[in-house]
Image (cartoon, rainbow, N blue to C red; front, side):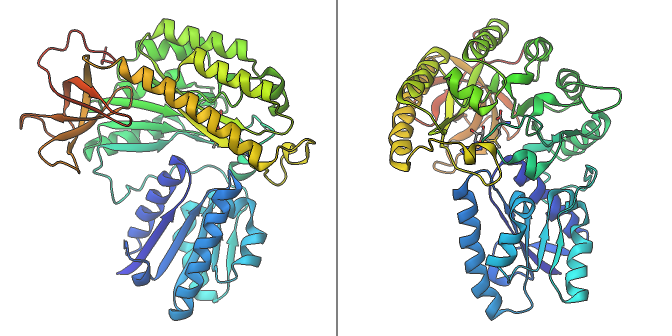
Amino acid sequence: MAKLHLITYGCQMNEYDSERVAGLLREQRYELTEDETAADVILVNTCAIREKAEDKVFSKLGELRALKRRNPGLLIGVMGCMAQLQQEAVQRRAPQVDLVLGSPAIARVAALIDQVRRERRPVMDTGEAPLVKITVRPPAASALRAFVTVMEGCEKHCTFCVVPRTRGRERSHPPEAIVAEIRGLVADGCREVTLLGQTVNAYGRDLAPPRDLAELLARVNDIDGLARIRFTTSNPYNLTDRLIRAMRDVPKVCEYFHLPLQSGSNRVLERMNRGYTRERYLDLVGALREAVPEMALSTDLIVGFPGETEADVDDTLDMVERVAYDNAFVFRYSRRPGTPAASMPDQVPEDVKARRHARLLDAVTRTAAARSRRLAGRVVEVLVDGPSRKDPGQLTGRTRCNRVVNFDGGGGARPGALVHVRVAEVLPHSLRGAMASEAEEAVCLSR
Ligand code: SAM
């Protein structure tokens, strides 16, 4: 069997795509290897969201160039968002790359590799194509948790973002194909799925007849053997009352919601073209917490957007305090070629971005810690992963609010089981506890 080495950067959707590529190539007799020096084919799945992500890829491609000098038969491919956005730069800066394939070409990966071998010349396939649901199972199909792409693309045109150019227009998979895929995963032992889309809560608007995420959640909920459903990433602009009600009423949907805010300043939100104000965002948070009081919220924040002032940062800090996020990802604005914000005046110097980043990180760490402390002494539902890596005498798993819990399982719980754990200690990145017999007072509990 030929050997395939996969290197994946970026988001969960890239992880999902890499697994499908591994599955497709397994059918062509490629087996996965962890050792890049043993590989016949190396595919680098790339991210273009920030400049740093691209730098990492070019530096990796530099390392692979040396490997290819020692092993000229090695085929190197680049896939994912950089393949779509930076194809010329990839060809210019990394001439050792034999294959550049955009996201729509993933389903044809085996034929494209054959073409490179046959024609002995670099091949590029980055054109538009209809969305294809790849039904092949990934080699790691027996995992307890799995990602499932339900839609791709984004049409929001935030002025900082390359996604509309790398992943194209919003295109959804039909619910039947998604349900069939999840049934297959569950048959292989999967207990929790995360439905993925760049704007997952815009799911189904392009289908005929139109569908929505609320309906999809209800259909996935009906799959026997599945314990939990998550979904990401949502855009506040598309958050409907129907989806909020589904989060309240569909039992397997977890009480964890990632809702990117980006900035707490209305002036910046407008320049970002986000389509909502801080007041609208707070109303949505109010509605979510009214429907599901235990809802854990996480967000993405950008500091140093062009023209951002200290007063704008204060507004973002104020939102962090008001919303009290369980988790937040803070990014320094990265100037992306071809986006409207890249040519806006008043670009913020890097040292100022760094200072604002530190201020915001400090605030989100504080509020997240306060949210965690609430869980001390409470009983939480945990999906058991198995023995803890640090201490095999303990079990590890996750709560519905997506917290890692290490606990003394008394030898009783199998991987994949749902158990109740009383939280004894709240640590910065995890919880510690012991199995509890009673479930009545459980927080973030299945309904
Ligand atoms: N669909 C989501 C939304 O509501 O905007 C965004 C998903 S995006 C792939 C992940 C995060 O990367 C964004 O939420 C944003 O915070 C960050 N991001 C995107 N473009 C960026 C840029 N040019 N500079 C810094 N961060 C950026």
